Image (cartoon, rainbow, N blue to C red):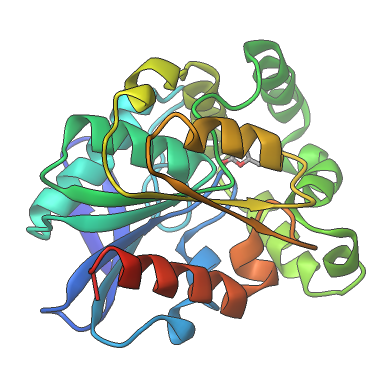
Length: 262
Ligand SMILES: O=C(O)CC1=CCC(=O)O1
């Protein structure tokens, strides 16, 4: 377990794989921690330096009081990558992790050479949707959202298996400030204009049963970046890396090969 104290927040991160390999960085979604990628890692090509972290207010990172700004979340990733002396990484961001990915690519092209925008968009939801969620959490805690969230996160077939309950547990154990803080950051983010200016290899991944960022929404964002590629994972929800880790890793492998990262 490793911790970086940025002065604003203590960030929990993990580095696996080959310390001198080509870097790949994973940023997870609202209500999940870096274990989101556990099942994908064993299926990644050998020789990568694999970096994961818990964004502020999630997992084992510290919990500054809500609200957070997207600028702060991007700065956390930037500070961690500077600390680890990462240049030219492939940054894989899922959902809010994909917003962080877009913000970081706009700011630090020296750190990011390619993007994987998974189950994300340039703008996710509307301020009124996020306000409703924040009100519910303030009143009744994160658990109040859990059942509805499972329907957005997972396909019908995955929800029929008890495995999805582990992810429900992960979600309800996230600190209230972390959850609220990230809702506020998402609510205040519209990256359509900056993302339209990005020129770097990009892979978009969507899940056919994603109730949070449906395929058309993901595609609309991916199409903002010329030359990008889009993959639809069938029978998967918002977290295809959990439901279909082998297939998800295969998409990453093929993208990494295409761009000459491995
Ligand atoms: O909870 C959800 O609906 C899924 C989600 C939206 C943004 C994010 O990071 O996760």
